[in-house]
Length: 264
Image (tube, rainbow, N blue to C red; front, side, top):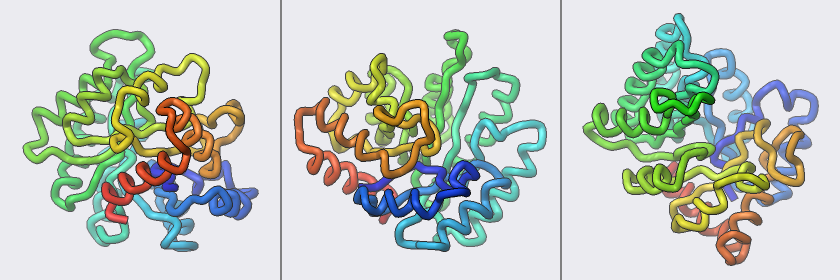
């Protein structure tokens, strides 16, 4: 299997990272993709990637929650790191829009996203899109609508990639797929009140990839604890249950999709 989104380079794993990696190997992980967050995370991410270049593949990007008044400086450092050695990175990410807490930096997030989408086009690399709606439920806080608007109006050449940690509606999932994206499914699909099972049931398996977003959003039976890449087996099992197919089929198809998307 491939964990298409994991932050196991983060400090939450400093005390037992070797054990976490061993468990990932034992669980059958072939590759673990490491999306960037901001300039504070670059060196940690790089160090982990260099420890096993076959297992770990890097992305480069500026996370929307790291966009603030100084975002242009962060964006420039991120761009330099990416363009200095683009072959080092399999994708642009984690990028996107996050309106969950507030929309203070909505304009800056939008500007940063448009620029990073242009990098993906120039380098012909997929993107990992982080999309999170506001808590107030207002249309102006709908990050999915904003993302679709940006993709339609500012991308003459449509990028490909993942709607990471999907939390939208079935119609939004279908729209994303119609635009050439695949849907990232993680631990939330195992939660009792999750809407993801209906979305997974309605999408072709070929349009789904598996992820953990470790250390966040651990699946049942580990919900409430630190997530890790090995727990992707629970995600695969849930997808197999929803689609009434074997876990082996889920592993095979989602792995092939991820390999094709990222050129692995």
